[in-house]
Length: 290
Length: 342
Ligand SMILES: Nc1ncnc2c1ncn2[C@@H]1O[C@H](COP(=O)(O)OP(=O)(O)OP(=O)(O)O)[C@@H](O)[C@H]1O
Ligand SMILES: [Mg+2]
Image 1 (cartoon, rainbow over the protein chains, first blue to last red):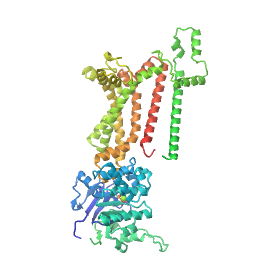
Image 2: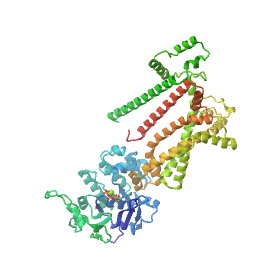
Image 3: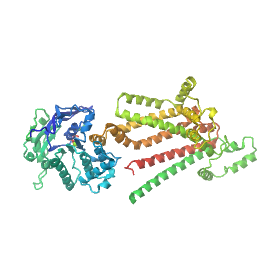
Image 4: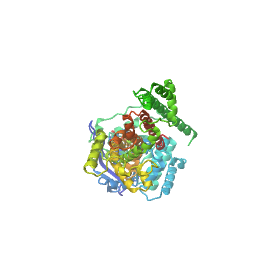
C-alpha cells in the first residue's frame, strides 16, 4: 500500500513527573496503521491507555509528551491547538473509555450524553439527535432503546454501559476509533455481537480501529495486526495470524501462560521478564507487512 | 415509578420527619428549661415589684407556676404548638405578632446577601479550580481569608464610617430614611417588594441604597465560604473520568466546566448554600445591631437587654424552627436533584 497511512506515531514518549521520581509510562513507541484492526495487548500498567490518550492529546497538562512524528491522515497532530483538536475529537478520532462506570456523567441521562456527542459536530434539532441516538442504541444491540435513553448511568449494567459508550463514540462516525477494553465487561454472546459491529465498521465503512485489550486470544483472532507492549515499550508488532508462532521471548511467555482447554493439568508457567527489555537497545521487531 | 420505590420514598420521608419532630421537641424542652432556670421572676415581670404578696400569689397560680414541672411543660407545649408564644413585656403585644412583623426585614437582608454570595462566590470558585495556582486563585484565597478573619461588626462599622460618615455615598443605618418610614403599607413585609407594589419608586430606591451595605457585607461572608467550597468540589469533579469522556467527544471546554463538572457540584452546593443562608440568619444579631436594621436579630437583642424572656424564647424557637426547615428543604432538594438518591 502506498497511500497515506491513517495514523503514524514515531518515538512517542510520555513521562509523568511525581515526587517519588518520574514515571515513564510510554517509551519510544512507534507504529503506523491504515483502515484496519490494530490490537494493543499488554499487562496492566504497560501504557496502553496512555498511548491511546496521547493520540487525542488528552493527557493531563502535567504529563510530558514528546514524539518525533504523530500524524493523522497526513496532518501533524503535535502542533494542533486545543481548538483544532476539538474539531478532530469525536468527529475524526474517538475513544471508547475503559470503565463505563466512571466514564459516564452520573447526573445526566445516557440519552442526553449520546445526543451531545452527535450535536457537538452536527447542526441538528433535538428531535433528530434523539432519533439518531435511538438508532445507535439499537445498533449496539440494546433492547428497548426508548427506555434506556432515559436511564441514568447507575441504572445500567456494566455491559450495557460499555455498549452505551460504544454508541456514544460511534455516533459522529469517526474515521479512527480507539477502543479501550470495549468488550471486557460483556458476556460472550454480547461480546460477539459488539465485535461484529466493530468489524463491520472497519470492513464496510473503512474505519480504523485500535483495539486495546488484555486478552491475547481475542486479539489474535479478531485483529489484523497486534502490538505487544511491556513496561511502556513496544515488544513486537506482528500479523495477528502469526502471533501464535511468534519467537519473541516476551510474547512466547505470554502465550505459554494461556490455559489450554484440553491441555495437561500442569501448572501454568510464571511469566518471565528480562531486564534487557527495558533498555533502548532492545529493538522493536516489526514483522508485519505494511 | 415502581411500588417498591414509592415505599422507599415514604419510608425515607417518614424517617426525616421523625428526626425533625424529635429535634424540635428537644428545642422546646431546652427553651422551656432555660425559662425556668434564668434568675428572672416571670411573675414579678408581670405584676411589678410593688405588688402585695396576695396579688403575687394569685398571679403565680394564674400562670400555672404552682403545678409540677412536667405539667407546666405540657401546657407550654400546647401553647407553642397553637402559636401562643406569650406576651412581650416590652411591647405588650403577643410575641408571635412581633416576630411576624420584624422577620421579613431579616429575610430581605439574608436573601439578598445569599444571592450576592452565590452569584459571585460560585463563579469565583469555579475559576479558581480551573486555573489552579493562577493569580485568580490566589486573589480568591486572600479575599476568602479576609472574609473568615474579620468580624462583621468591625467591617460594618468601618463601612458606615467611610461610606456614610466620611464620603456620604450611602445612607446611614436603618431600612429607609426616617422621612420615608411607615408610608408604604406592609403586604409582604419586604420593603423592596412592598414599595414596588405601592408604586413608590423613590422609597424603593431609598430602601435599595440602605440595603446595599449590610447585604454586601453578608454577601461577602457568604461568598468567602461558597467560593472555597465550590473550588474544592470542582477540583474533585474535574479529575473524574467522565470529564475526559466529554472532551473525547469534542465538547467545548466551557461546556465541560460549567455544564458537566459544575452540574455535578450543584448537588453538594445546595446543602452548602442552605447552611450559609442559615449562618446569615444566625449572624443577623450582630449585623442588625450595627445597622439598626429592624429585624429579628435586633428584636432579640432588645428583648435580651430588657430581660423580656417571652420574646427571647419565642425568637429562639422561631430561629430554631427555621433552621430545621432549611435543613429539611435542602435534604429534599438533594433527593430530587441527585438521580442516585431518587
Ligand atoms: N494521569 C496519570 N498520572 C500519573 N501516572 C499515570 C497517569 N495515567 C497513567 N499513569 C501511569 O502510566 C502507566 C501506564 O498506565 P496505563 O493506564 O496506560 O496502563 P494500561 O496499560 O492501560 O493498564 P490497564 O490494562 O490496567 O488499563 C501506569 O504506570 C500508570 O500508573
Ligand atoms: Mg488502561
